[in-house]
Amino acid sequence: MNLVKYSNNSRSVDIEGYSLLIVAHTNELKNEQLEYLSGFIIDTDNTKFAQDIIFQIRNNDNPEIALLPIFISSVHKLPKHLEIHTDGPISMDLIDSYPQRIAAILKRVNKLQVPKGMMHQEFLNYKVLAYCYTRNKVLSPIASRYSLIGYIFPLVSLLFKEHEAIPLLKTLEDLTQQKLLSFSLQDYIHLCKSCSGNYVNFRECCPKCDSIDIKAHDMVHHFVCAHVAPEKDFKVEDGLECPKCDKQLRHIGIDYDKPSTIYSCNTCNHEFQNSGMKALCIDCSTEHELDELLEKSVGNYSLTQKGENNVLGLMKSKRKPRESIGNLSIPVFKILLNQEIQRVKASQCHSHFVSISIINKQLQLLNTEVKNELAKEINHIIQSYLKEADILVSKNYDCHYLLLPETKEDQLERIEHIQYNLNKLLSDNLQQSTNEVAIQYERISPEKTAHNYITS
Image (cartoon, rainbow, N blue to C red; front, side, top):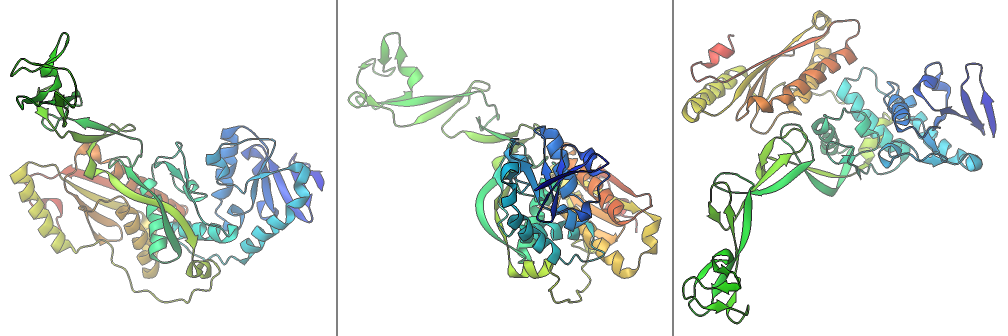
């Protein structure tokens, strides 16, 4: 083992021809030619520094750099939610025993065939598959309070921002549907419909006024006179006494029993046997009916043979027919929009119309095939934030309309997420250009018609 110090103050360990850069801060990555390295050793117990190092490496635009081995010096103890994105601890005293492990990862990294001209989502998909291949192991989540959805996936969680829980899960679902990954269930999670958070408080409530200020009372059945009432009606100063026949109740099972429970509401005084149930999101304070929570499955993902062929460039190329963007035509969308206007007029419910316009002169210069690929990416991003009842239609690749039934203004945070991710898609694929994704929305008015919203 040789410890080499360079003139730029960088440190590396050379073992059997493999050069591992020792890093304590992201500044040490700036002047390095990362493509010539064999891996990295994190040498800090500062959680923030370590997190930044891992994030910067794993999000490198070159998959061959992003997938290099990352070890943690065994003298430091980093949290599990960070260690999961690395290849584990490394002991400097036993470092000579690691070349075989490094070689196994690098051999698989070198076999990767990275397709050219991938769109943003395709690139994310490829990195997920390539990580599974280079590590030759199952992609298993760990429970973590640091994650919005309560679970963290190796590498995958680094490719999405904290609020992008639904796109993260949808990416894994799509790869499974394409049979590039196989799935085995580990858990079900229930997410807030507004912010996709998993930190939800379940509360019993009054079915009449929804108040949570309720109290449970045992029901008492007096055997002698068959009177049944809440226990509070039987209570006297020295025990229990039947309000119907005035006899004392001394022994449960002999004089009386408690067949059930009844609730009383301290807000509206309503009495009931079966309480309601509400779920309150701790992060955004949105209150849900239980059936409004988004149920998602979480589990283990394994690379299939088809997935391996994909990252190795062995997939047979097939020219795919152009996929339509949006799930309806404009004329059909107008019919549904007019129906929704009538429904709003009759029920006074909340629904919204959203228009999405992409303004970028460089888009006009793209050829038809690239425009079609871009349209599919735009469609994928928008649909990842839609609910089952929502409707998407597109005039073309730069103009899209949404109909969001039963949606109040405080439930439109996902529109901001769509705008952010569309801007990111354009900036990742269109260089030296100004991107603008203009999104306008308004509540559906019973005084308007579809023509007022879509003029052509």
